[in-house]
Amino acid sequence: MLLSGLLLLLVCSTQASHFYGTVITYYPKNTNADGSVTVVLRYKLNFHSCTNASWACLSGNCGNESVIGGFVVDTEDSGNSIEWCQTETISTRLVPSNAPFLLVFASSGWIQGIKNGIVSWRAITLVELKNRSDTGRANSSPQTTMLPAVRVPSNCQRDFDLLAFDPDGDEVKCRYGNDSLFECNPCTPPSVLSLSPSCTLSFRPTNSSNEGPYAVQLVMEDFPRQTISLTQTNGLQEVKTTSDAISKIPLQFVVRVDPAVPSCTEGLYLPKFLPPTPANRAQLYTAVNHKLEITINAEATNSTIPTVLFSGPINVAKNTSGSGRFTLTWTPSEREDGESHPVCFVVQALYNTIKYHSELRCVIVNVGIDLPINMTAPPINSTVAPTTITTQTTSPTTNLSNTIVVGLRMKISTSLPLTEETSNIFSQKLKEELMNRGLPSSIEVFVGSFGTVEVTTPAG
Image (cartoon, rainbow, N blue to C red; front, side):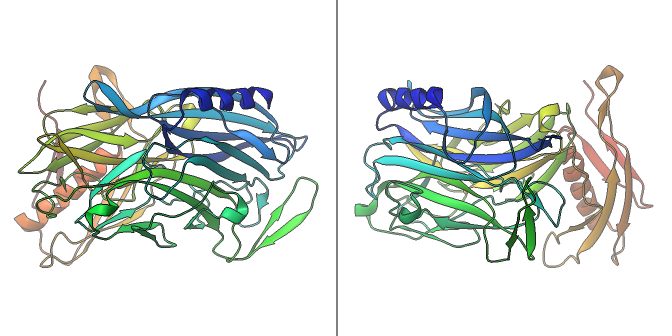
């Protein structure tokens, strides 16, 4: 506790007026014979420069903590300086029981010029570890992440569909922080943004007087989809209905409202995503110690697209192969086995020196978790009927000579004839699935007239 307090004081003195927000999630790990519980918390801190700091225990027994961090996730460079830096710290706590406890991260201050008048920061996390009657396991928090700052021109409409995933299958809801619950200091929401319970943050065109940065201070909560009971180590039970939140985590970041753009049409000045960029809120699957590659393509005819900005787990690497062409790669370790990890990204375009962001996209990467057997591929356009592709794969393994072997059992069901058009549709869908499994984007997939499937890679 004393160490945490000292670290908080350190960050206060070195990072005044440089805060860009925070997010924290948790996964319970082991319940021991004596009733103690091991829980792993991952928290991201966003500052003007790369900074280490700690969350502190607010109430309850927060146990003993061991920390690995803070690892740099990503930075945004602005000329010869860094505009923001996101770090992630992995905190492992051994608590004496599964009783809930509260963590806090509070100090001053947010970046200068915040339009909704927020100076000091404060964020609260409720860690609930009691055993659930529906899953038989301790509760996990919602899983989400966010970039430190996202941009939108003042004359364009934009919806930020925030990632809201729950490993227990709960319904995740978003709300602004509440002053009466001391969830921020203060909790004044941005006047230019509206928030839906389903975690969509909406911006509507506004006048130039409202341009500037806004502090967004949200709270995510998980609600059971049916009435359940939570059982504490000492045998006490608590009933949770569909109207009762189980845990809560903060999601705080900056939205910059920039000067008007000549056109709000995506693909001109504002970047437009192109295939095979994953859809927002897509779920990807990979195995421990196996490299996952996420391909991100975008275009903007009047701008250049030099960079992708992202938020995700530590050790994600980004690479570029030209304007608007990027890959994010990640190899999860044993530590991430059985977990679901969020990754969010935007591409940033430049028109002269003016920065424009694409829409926000986020995916969930499931590590060592079986892919659902049935997947329905959406129609490519209005003239093609939906097609069901059923697959089951084994874990990819790396063999000698750098050959990737993937066992695939597949069934394609469609009422359509296997024409060249439908063959191309099946080939694209299968390629996307194989890429999600870790095969490189350079593979070529061909579905023949008799249902044969051929997968090749370029020589070299």
